[in-house]
Image (cartoon, rainbow, N blue to C red):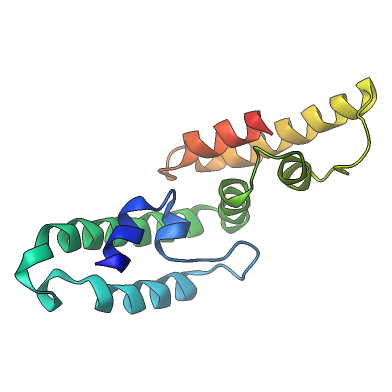
Length: 147
């Protein structure tokens, strides 16, 4: 039941399949992660007391696999970028700086802020390729704006 609860509370398809940011991301890795988790949460392999939770978790697992396969087929680099954005802790100065490729330490000047805004716009432009196929596209755009 813990695995089903983790899948249901995951913030993104990447989290559902436990794919780490920065790791090599390809269809084979997605399918391997899916198979491993499918064995744990398949409703037919569970007792009846928690069948609804496992049914919903398995459906989320399947939809996450399909979404990631579609994103990878569309544009692998943009898919990796969405993964990076969704896993970034943009609510902290260090996390936002890391996402935008900036130094988190110094106080920002007007020129520094302009550079960060330019970096954010560039990320948004790359993410735009995923707008039709990524279920978490709006969440990634919001994270970029937050950073």
